[in-house]
Image (cartoon, rainbow, N blue to C red; front, side):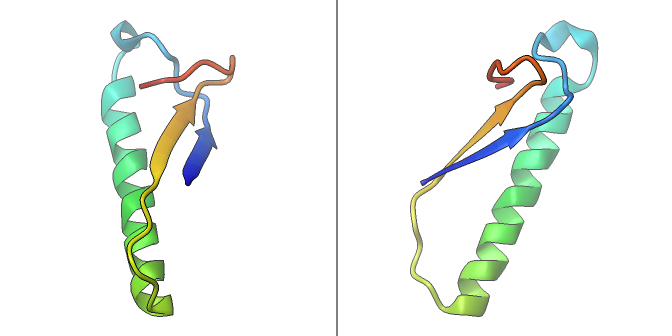
Length: 60
């Protein structure tokens, strides 16, 4: 399963805190998935988080 997030974060890493923001988004998504898995009693499902910038390029 793939989870695709589109954001306004700039893709190049030299524009500030983009890596930190991407990590925060990824952590948040991981927590939501874990909570929902527990709530619905679903076994672990492998997934990949893909974050795209506003120009449709992968951020990380």
